Length: 91
Image (cartoon, rainbow, N blue to C red; front, side, top):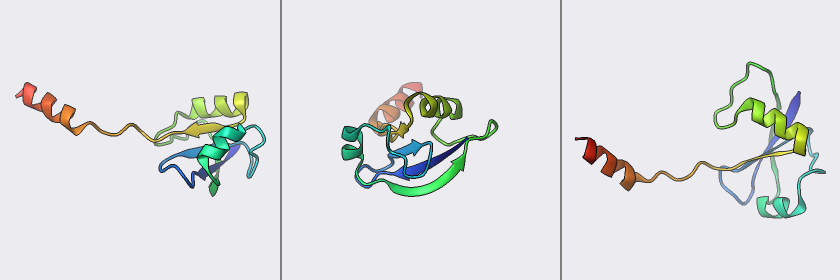
Protein backbone atom coordinates (compact mmCIF):
# COMPACT_ATOMS: atom_id res chain seq x y z
CA UNK A 1 0.00 0.00 0.00
CA UNK A 2 1.21 3.50 -0.86
CA UNK A 3 0.15 6.80 0.62
CA UNK A 4 0.90 10.45 -0.05
CA UNK A 5 2.02 12.68 2.81
CA UNK A 6 1.28 16.42 3.00
CA UNK A 7 2.16 19.05 5.57
CA UNK A 8 -0.18 21.83 6.56
CA UNK A 9 0.41 25.35 5.29
CA UNK A 10 -1.37 26.72 8.37
CA UNK A 11 -0.64 24.36 11.27
CA UNK A 12 2.92 23.55 12.30
CA UNK A 13 3.79 19.83 12.68
CA UNK A 14 0.42 18.77 11.23
CA UNK A 15 0.39 16.18 8.46
CA UNK A 16 -2.27 14.62 6.24
CA UNK A 17 -1.92 11.13 4.78
CA UNK A 18 -4.10 10.13 1.81
CA UNK A 19 -4.09 6.93 -0.26
CA UNK A 20 -3.07 8.63 -3.52
CA UNK A 21 -1.32 11.79 -4.57
CA UNK A 22 -3.73 14.74 -4.57
CA UNK A 23 -6.67 12.51 -3.64
CA UNK A 24 -8.51 14.64 -1.08
CA UNK A 25 -11.95 13.36 -2.11
CA UNK A 26 -12.64 11.76 1.30
CA UNK A 27 -11.15 14.57 3.43
CA UNK A 28 -13.92 16.74 4.93
CA UNK A 29 -13.98 20.26 3.47
CA UNK A 30 -13.93 21.85 6.95
CA UNK A 31 -10.79 19.90 7.79
CA UNK A 32 -9.10 21.02 4.57
CA UNK A 33 -10.05 24.64 5.28
CA UNK A 34 -8.42 24.43 8.71
CA UNK A 35 -5.44 22.47 7.37
CA UNK A 36 -4.77 25.02 4.63
CA UNK A 37 -3.24 24.28 1.26
CA UNK A 38 -1.64 20.83 1.49
CA UNK A 39 2.09 20.93 0.73
CA UNK A 40 3.21 17.65 -0.87
CA UNK A 41 6.10 15.93 0.90
CA UNK A 42 6.36 12.39 -0.46
CA UNK A 43 4.82 9.13 -1.58
CA UNK A 44 5.49 6.48 1.04
CA UNK A 45 5.08 2.70 0.96
CA UNK A 46 3.33 1.34 4.06
CA UNK A 47 5.27 -1.89 4.53
CA UNK A 48 4.61 -4.26 7.43
CA UNK A 49 8.04 -3.74 8.97
CA UNK A 50 8.15 0.04 8.53
CA UNK A 51 8.27 2.21 11.65
CA UNK A 52 7.20 5.84 11.73
CA UNK A 53 8.26 8.41 14.31
CA UNK A 54 4.85 9.54 15.60
CA UNK A 55 2.33 7.29 13.87
CA UNK A 56 1.45 3.66 14.47
CA UNK A 57 1.69 2.05 11.02
CA UNK A 58 -1.27 -0.29 11.67
CA UNK A 59 -3.48 2.61 12.78
CA UNK A 60 -2.43 4.59 9.68
CA UNK A 61 -3.31 1.70 7.34
CA UNK A 62 -6.62 1.16 9.12
CA UNK A 63 -7.61 4.85 8.99
CA UNK A 64 -6.70 5.09 5.30
CA UNK A 65 -8.88 2.07 4.48
CA UNK A 66 -11.75 3.12 6.75
CA UNK A 67 -11.86 6.92 6.25
CA UNK A 68 -9.69 7.56 3.19
CA UNK A 69 -7.30 9.84 5.12
CA UNK A 70 -5.33 10.18 8.36
CA UNK A 71 -4.56 13.44 10.17
CA UNK A 72 -1.42 13.56 12.30
CA UNK A 73 -1.52 16.32 14.90
CA UNK A 74 1.52 17.76 16.69
CA UNK A 75 2.47 16.30 20.06
CA UNK A 76 1.24 18.21 23.11
CA UNK A 77 3.67 20.86 24.38
CA UNK A 78 5.99 19.82 27.18
CA UNK A 79 5.09 21.04 30.63
CA UNK A 80 8.57 21.95 31.87
CA UNK A 81 7.32 23.15 35.24
CA UNK A 82 5.59 19.83 35.88
CA UNK A 83 8.77 17.96 34.92
CA UNK A 84 10.88 20.15 37.20
CA UNK A 85 8.53 19.66 40.17
CA UNK A 86 8.54 15.91 39.62
CA UNK A 87 12.35 15.90 39.63
CA UNK A 88 12.44 17.99 42.80
CA UNK A 89 10.10 15.57 44.60
CA UNK A 90 12.22 12.57 43.64
CA UNK A 91 15.39 14.12 45.17
